[in-house]
Image 1 (cartoon, one colour):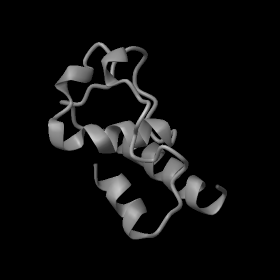
Image 2 (image 1 turned 90 degrees about the vertical axis):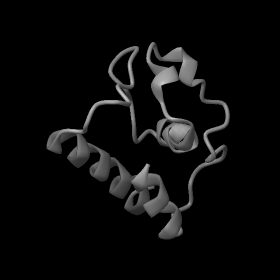
Image 3 (image 1 turned 30 degrees about the vertical axis):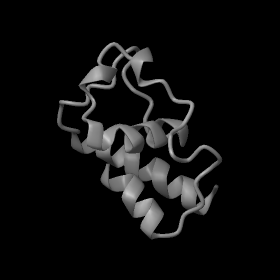
Image 4 (image 1 turned 45 degrees about the vertical axis):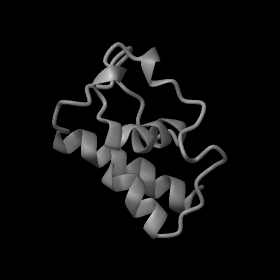
Length: 83
């Protein structure tokens, strides 16, 4: 996930367990659809509060809308500057 990589490159201090440890993607009905390459980043985004999901779904195969991306960027920037 690009946002998590950007946070890491910017040197943002991610909270403990920042690698997404302790986040169970199988708790989401479509958690198994998350690509192997993205599991750590998605788990980190959930742990950091950047991603909330849609009830019991993550919808990893769907494209983000502009509104969803705006919320994601807002949460990211809020975490960096208001952390």
